[in-house]
Length: 162
Image 1 (cartoon, helix red, strand yellow):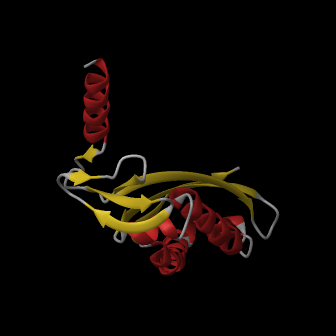
Image 2 (spheres, helix red, strand yellow; image 1 turned 60 degrees about the vertical axis):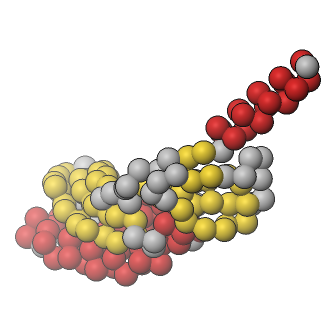
């Protein structure tokens, strides 16, 4: 009798732990024994206990800030405070193509800023702020499309002496 009770409670706990309820703005990327299977949600999702695992992907628009420091062509230190917004459009690609989505996007932003700002003198930075934003937005938008992500906006909030 005791064995049946333990077996029943174990089965019940495994069943309950394998039920997931992703909301309207999230999806679950499901992996079976480490291999990507499918994107599921919203609503009730059942995962095979001990075999399948799920990674939650948020589909809402995300806003991030980045402070970057670099050197201009005239060897002046500058700091750039940047705001960027993105949204995952393909959950499977965003999980499978890059390990850490935000770190990958920040790395691209830093590379583009380094290239653009190292070719300019400090006095030109403030006058060319919109041009720099446009260049970052264009290059970043093209590259993160491969990550299953869409770029919504890039805005330079402040450029100041570093």
